[in-house]
Image (cartoon, rainbow, N blue to C red; front, side):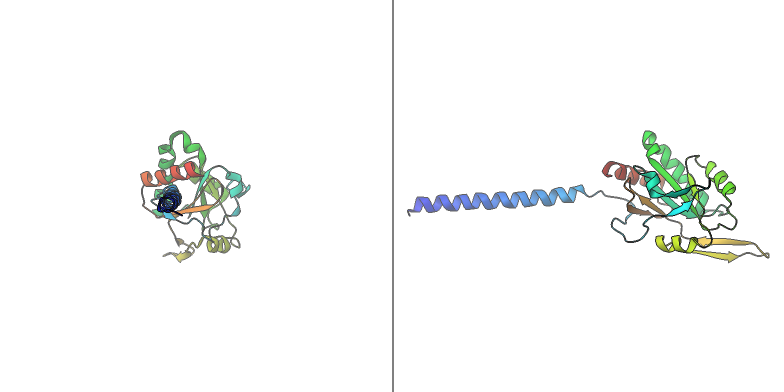
Length: 207
């Protein structure tokens, strides 16, 4: 075998190796670019916050399957909450407006941590204060511990100054599911409506 043949074979090997390396880099680059850059905490693949089956303020049993194709935002609170709950729900109403026509692809779900006082009628009226499409779910006292455990939500009754009066301490963030019912994000309280709307747009685009 002459030197020319050896040079040709070496050149072919070099070209083949370079092509493989370029292909691998392209695949790696494509994978890196495909991951959305969320502003909320990415919970994709988490083994908790896997859903719910609870009665809504109209008495209808609800689960994530009812909202297939929509981004679902779940918030735990109670109607007599003086600060976190009304400000969070008002923010979500603003987010829906910011989404424009895509606002119809957003479903907000409010889960009560105070079913003793939060009657279906009260919850329905409370939702109407923010957006008539928002749904409130009312777990029974027996269901509440389980759903809170599933979402790793903290809640605790705090006795008031007078007999029978109390408030509820509770977690104040929101859990966000994509259109396929998969848990994707945790949005901290006070993150801002623009950031949340941006994350929801990304989910809608990538679901």
